[in-house]
Length: 425
Image (tube, rainbow, N blue to C red; front, top):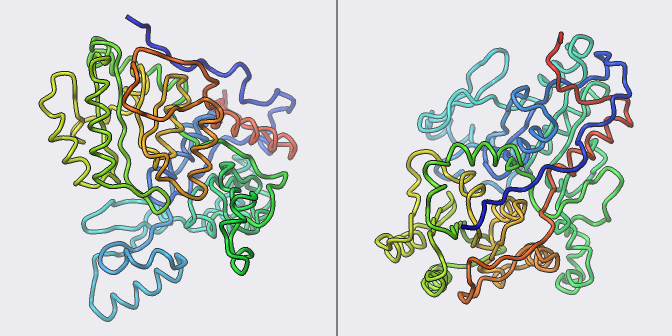
């Protein structure tokens, strides 16, 4: 039996040297996460919070768009405009499915059929808290991710420039000087490459962002940030030991995402995947298949029908605890659809073999991301001819720890530092 391999912790610490006197004015003990309600974006913020040692000492706020009905067609609008239009529509049609209620001085968004008691991000209020508590609690670290959070995060910085340190994850497209740090994948700068310039009509080039190479306040990563670090996988290995440890080896984990505007596929790819999995099933001890929230029903249905009675295959139906971290910890190899930067980034941080299906369907910067992974030897295309017990070595992605190091360095340059000790100890 091949031993389970987990990523080793980074050789270097993500904390800066203790060069400060520990005074409250330079010690960051708390963080605010500005999310957009989408797990892929918020997971990046929480991953960075975790890497900085502030887990359990952060507050989550969300920039929430109106949802349901016509709202799904209005996501191209700025959030503020979208909300005003929604209010106008509700006044006309009497739709009261969304309302705003007070919650400890902060507005919260409550929906009849959705998430309740969610703190709605209010830039002025968060900045006010940062200013008023600065003398007692020190600076406030603000971490945001996603297009809808840009205006809120930048406004917090504008309202309390001396009291906050703002990190924006994912490229904000313009005016990067509004943030202390921007964390973005290298493929976000694909538009500046010669290959991309050839794909863009001359008249449209000035409108395709980013228009400038990364500045000093930009942290470039290969993939997405995440929470699947060494400690998390060790914990998951223990939690899922009884269910996964005794499965026949090698264990192949198959993660299915969903088609996107830059990675088109449908049932045809699902049929191709099913055939390939049947071809390599002889070399697998066990296979576990998981679908994401974005997986179309027609794709999941096809794979369930194909493998639901196979003795080697288990398909997670979405009920009960999510085995995702357990899969990352116990898998011997992965097959992942090319659309998901997040799932690929997590799997590629384990040092285990990662096979990708559908990379040829990706376009624009997502094709560049796939190319980058392949050139680094991190992934290989899934062909259906593999022997799953075979392996290869590569340097695991370490984007989250690298980003945390850059945050600590930037804080040190400002005379601040992360304080992970409990106040008063």
